[in-house]
Image 1 (cartoon, rainbow, N blue to C red):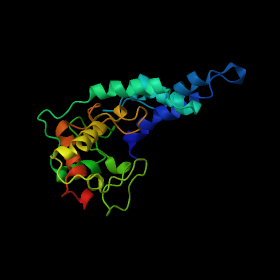
Image 2 (image 1 turned 90 degrees about the vertical axis):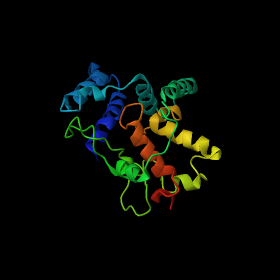
Image 3 (image 1 turned 120 degrees about the vertical axis):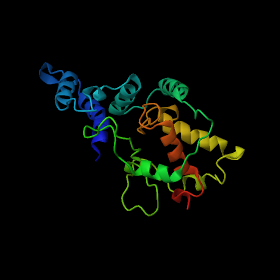
Length: 216
């Protein structure tokens, strides 16, 4: 597994451990779990220990997972509404870039790890969770297959008015997935600055351009 995602999963492990709360003997398991987790990580290059600190929304989702109960509807709707407001649409109004560049970005897992330098261009690491091309022999299955993404949704011309809804949804989902699913595990590529606006446009082209191998 890419080291970047080990750090993403660390707060989840912490939440599972902390679900025991205070047990026999007066041991505060919440506190002990936090101490053990923090001691297992250290600042190194681009990676800082503060990645272990969940924001309020993710903490609420983790607590819901541990309890086995769904996030309260009001809380989920509040998270989604707030996330929707963070979405920045393309500055020039154009959503699609070059699918060939998008394919390279989707297949790259580089960036934001302790072995990367500050000038390292981030990848999208999309294949780690999704099938992208039917020719792939290895890909993640945490997320749904993206093969034929645009074709299955009837996108024959991404610039047509009929395609507007799916084009905007796809952009928003990549920018901040919590706008559509409060507890989404999908990286918030735009909101967290993982991908630049141009990189997002290129990945959009990979998903929606009829000429892209995704839609063949």
